[in-house]
Length: 569
Image 1 (cartoon, rainbow, N blue to C red):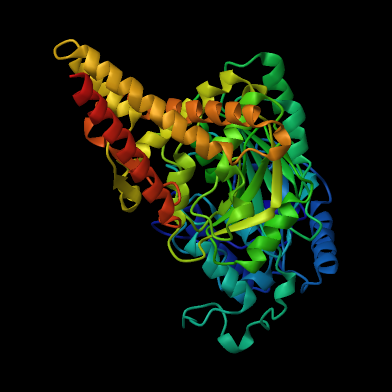
Image 2 (cartoon, helix red, strand yellow; image 1 turned 30 degrees about the horizontal axis):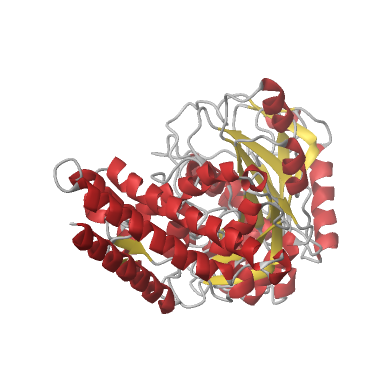
């Protein structure tokens, strides 16, 4: 035969019926037949593949020996992939050993049709650090791959329950054995009892609009001090950026067996929620670390999160610390005093926070179907609250990992122009009020200053404008005074004299007032008038005094408004 003339050994032919386009089914049948005939290694190839490197069989077998020695695993307990010149960094056409069929009985699940077989095998052995590319041996897939194939591509979600089942099979933990399997259960290899050989799989997803190569380079240089499988996914969400920046980020892509850097691009600006979802869709890791593109992570970030995963294996969200540099401007000090950035430090305050900011989160990966909703603003605001609360399915589902810290910059360098960013948060947070997944954390209060002012502006052209406007002004002054007094006691005594502390508290009260105005404006913009007077509990019932304080403050404001109106009227 042609194979024998090429030095590839004997050929076996099988005639399979009703399997047109079902490549994974065909591979399963061929692999089981090869195993019955005493085959040692199995490589998944197509009839349109060109092998470009001589000596590939010896090279791949040597890689199997290297993995067994390095990871202290049985020989053959590995998956080695060719370097596909048309699909770099993707494990097309992997090689497995007969050990795989002895443990799993087939290459991959029956549900796979013609997509997902090769990455399934590669991801499976990643859990033991036993998946590697053989970069020196190349092949070319001339048809298919990323492009159109000769058949209709049919993709299923294989990285959840299907992958978990096969992980158990490789470890020897699966209970069921079918009579039609290749071998009897008694002949199966011994179970892998040493759990220490398993390695954590943690990917890092970074949506980027700024395309700051210096910051991104620092992120992709993160390393763990323990064996771990890590891939970086940088999603460019600004295709209209300067070509120099785009090319610089594209040049960061790196092929590697570990700590590979993958660059993906959107064709337009879809926003941070969509960009995170894109990165999460490409990842098959057990956990995914979400970082913003303007943070400087601590070198021990991955170690901290891996430690948190080991301590809390059932957790769905691990909340890291997002530290801002020392506040030097009046505005940044006021933001600290009014606590609008309190959740950036929540990991230091609560072991089980209700939610955390997406500047630094680690979330469950392949087994979770929770994704960010696209309804939130492109620049962010509210999507982190919604995501975390939907993930908080049991006590301990969200945990703090204060050791996983990043340095976050001050918006607009801590100057007053950052109010635009703060009001943007408020616009996104207003969507939480009518989110069906968050209704248990919604509560009602009397009108706040922004709502009383809105009422005055609506009625003033028709009815007692002087009384209405004076009542609104009085209510605003009372609220500002009350909040200034409250924020005053949060300002460090090291700031100096009491007058300076009062000014900081006063500016903080203005920031909160601007947030309230932004929320009201957002409700009006969406014509959601029914959302007025309804608030979202940022602490999600963990701190009921927060609700009580809000209700009391709005009660006082309402009494002042009504009293002044009656007096002037």
